[in-house]
Length: 454
Picture 1 (tube, rainbow, N blue to C red):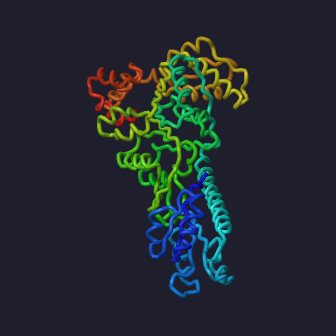
Picture 2: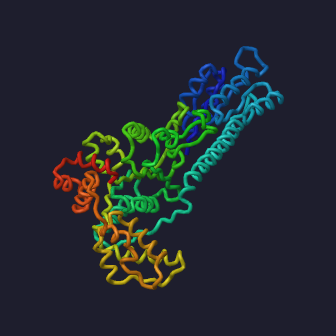
Picture 3: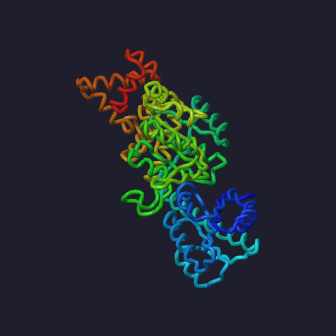
């Protein structure tokens, strides 16, 4: 099986070029040759090269090696990470030492044996591969730092709506299909993404999460595609983007509906080409990732309103999974409450706590606009604050009861926001029905939701 590397041979001897290419092409996917170093600069800025086998002398009769040293410095200035093997017909140890000081990794003396050429290139390629993996792991370690202390729970459910979701996961997890997870805030979209990755063929590689909703447009390209040293003021070193870091694994694009049209165009281009170009570079770097996206935004109305690209939507939703809100899976509220009660009882050393039966009924009748996340935080707060062994409804929902007794605001904006929220809750998140009841189009409803942060 051929290695994925790109080997470039630069030599003014046609026989050397031909022989080296014959020896290497059976072992590497791409082997290129150049008879003149004058084309090196444009080639390196245009293509990604792993190893260059560089001649020391190009002018007829030249034996000093100065040309080779000149082009070696030029190569390292353009791409410090390319690996250069110097090639000369004159075995001068001083030239070898000078080459190493300037960044060469090895030195071959012509005429070389084919086995020696292949062995040297293979050794250098393994070094390049190892260093590339180190860079990727450093980037992955940085990307995962934010998740180290985060606890990702289990899929807890016995309700019919969620059984449909679990059946979809069973079907798609082992594939490489792009997944789009839709659902309101707090419904567990990230947990579903992690479950899909855990059951996939990529489970041994990382799942890298990017919160696109919190990513400023000015940092989008550097964060997603990476940058090279000096690309901008704070670019102190080369850094891979999230696509490169996730190579071989899965990339979770959370809140993809929050991308601006400009960022959507860039994202589409990268997903179509399956390669990224780091900021400050002109070389495309291929990646192999499984893309899982999620959003709480109504993407289809957004497409109709010109706020989300239809071609990007088609690119990310080979399979679409829609998570039901908690109010539509009331059968799970008791199960989830007991799960969180056990978790936080152990965490805060309050084991043995119970929830009253009437409390379970009241929790099931509450609409839970914040969904599972709201229930989780409510149970945690109740565990922390309770002084008794039995938790009552008022321990879990004190703020909600207090809000019900407050005098409602009469400001036009507050009334409109409240009306929109009630309509959406009444119709279980169905925006078409909510818009009909409110007497407005879906596009208008979407703009109201954006305005009030719903």
